[in-house]
Length: 438
Image (cartoon, rainbow, N blue to C red; front, side, top):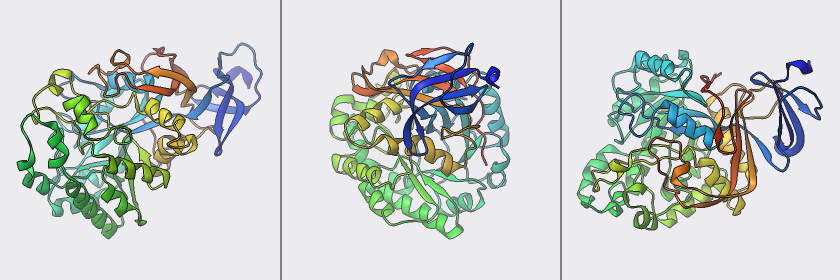
């Protein structure tokens, strides 16, 4: 019945079944109830004339730093940054303090998110060498997107570096395993290449071999046990060459940073504020990553949003921590790449809307369909914006894309049928929900 409609989105170009069509969307509570020409009175209307309406954008890799020392971020501020950037749902990482590697800590995080997160959410369960019983039962956890395996050390103390332990994690997990793929033994052996005070040495220390050898190993183990793995933030041309041969049950992700920034320019301009793991590399790697996007090898684009305070990032390298914010800039940066001809909007929608749902088994999201969840991102492909630090909702208050001009920008974010961001204003109390999985 028309009386049940709570919101109508009119006159937008909606992405339906692989094409854009000018249709209206009628929403009832948190579901898309009708698609077509809709004329109803006494219903809130959002006029999307001249705009495109996407399925809600999903960022499959964020670090919101809670629990722990939350000077740089927490669940509330990180999710505000998400909806400000047009992101309707996130997968949040377990390398917190304490780590999210027990059922007790996982459920604490789920409770902490309730009525505090502005976007919808799922959490990764952290793998350790000693939590095999939990890993075999993570498929029973509400709001669990998968298992996170740190094969090389990064922020936090979650690390599974020995091959026998990596094999135990992959063989025991009851959900997809997402991997931070750097070889810890190679990292340790190459510490001699760290130059005190010179962040340009970061990609020399954490070199291509470090990433490739780890990726080869986890893929070999996953194929042995016929388990699904997802390699996060792939950075090297060598890994892309490796993935160019089809490998069953193996997918991978690239970040917007690695598709936009490259060495040595990024280190010249941003110093330690461009430091992340795995590192930003030279332009030959950047070019090969774009080949992977164009050839449809890559499955997702995730921001690896990993903020630190300015004070922390200003420490002398290598005392400066790795990581940078990205959830709020993921969509504007990638829309700018669409407008510059780097990729088509249809491919971007696959990478940040459809594929996350298909790959991780998310229910009723990722597509604009009747009776699917009313998570939508409305963008103006002609809007030009210069990104500034003062736009950033993250507690860290900075972005590596400060003063970066983009064309294409989110103007509204709809989560669970409610407009939560419109024209840079956050409008609604935090009512994000755990994501449901098949």
